[in-house]
Image 1: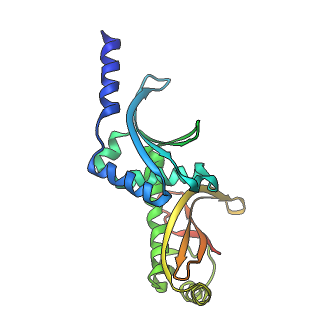
Image 2 (image 1 turned 180 degrees about the vertical axis):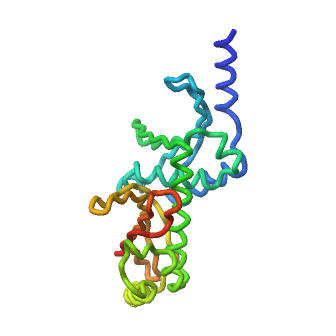
Amino acid sequence: MKKYLITLLSAIILISCASENEQKALNEIAAIYQAKVAYSKGFHSNTNQKTITNFTIKVSNCKMMDTMNFRHASANMARVAYHNFTEKEKNKYDEIIVKLIKDKDTTMYSYDKDLLRLTDKKATTAIAFSESILQHNFPKLDKLIDSECIKTSNFGLKMKKYISILENERGKITGYQLYKIGTTSAKNINLKMIRYVGEFQFSKGKKAAYFVNINTMEGKDKVVGYKID
């Protein structure tokens, strides 16, 4: 009887519909990565017999993954989903799983909600950095960087000059998109960072790859490293 109830409960969870926010997250991921995206919901028990609830994102027909590191892309997919969830949904799921289905192969990565909370919070700075450049609000950049790590005066002014050079070559910046999330470190100063990787788009069809590094420590949310090609 107990086994039957568990099996029935699993079936109910697996066929439950996506909420409006969950569907919005799936649509956004499909648009960003030009892929077919589906989902499932479920649960399992860990070694301590604790029930772990999950939301699984299934990605297929994604040509971008032929050249993009899926592990780092999946981290951003999970963050995008988490960001769109309501607070109730963020607490409901213990993990978000991302599966890449390609031919007969499946690659899967899992992200627990504590990590997702961290990457989503730090992404706020990476997005603000990107938006400031897109909107040519260069003075704002001075407030976003950690001056202890990026030791330069008039950062915003210098970035303005650099972006002007890029725009002279490639046309006006028309947008940006973050695609990947990874981690990196600076051993000489014992600094661990989350790296957000994306690209700026320009009116002449050109692009510029870039990354923004944010300190992983709680309360340390400024930019500690960057590069724009």
